[in-house]
Image (cartoon, one colour):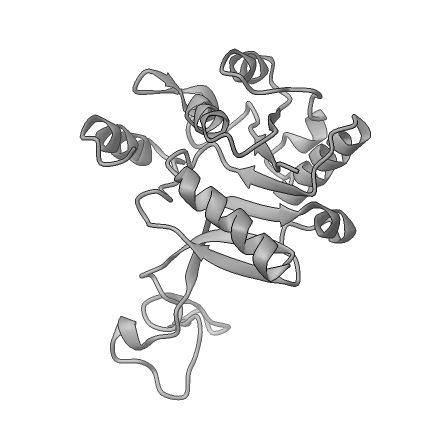
Length: 231
């Protein structure tokens, strides 16, 4: 049984207006993720969850399915991704879609390789875990070079150790979550939460994990595509 690909995209983005359908080189941002997911042949269906008519229209033009509309209450700044996923996956099950695994992809992370998507699915099946998170090792490290305000309003290290590492390489490894989440459907619907008890990391490269949320990141993504630094 093939997994499905689930892409959530709302219309009212704040940081970059209409971010999900803004042109990146020659096509809307969401189209890059849709086309790569379809071309991978990994999925039985590529589904887009949105409340926005324009996103729905563009998604269909590039081959995705939009079998339902997301409620407006789940398309606000305060709506959590967990609630969006629960609504979408529950709706798909009620519509007769049959899948034991689904991959939640963020369309603002369009460069994730299909080989890494397949690798995350293989890891989920092999280890029989609840979820596999696409991650990359983060050089900003709360044990070494990240601080927060303490109760006295002065800076303190976010994570304390008896002996603080002198080099970042000696600090405990920490991971940056990214736009690739591969779930066991039954376990997800049991907990109704994107963060499940038995989750494993699947390491991807930082460049393929670029998240496009700002004007600067749009420029970086355009440069990467123009210079063919990413495929």
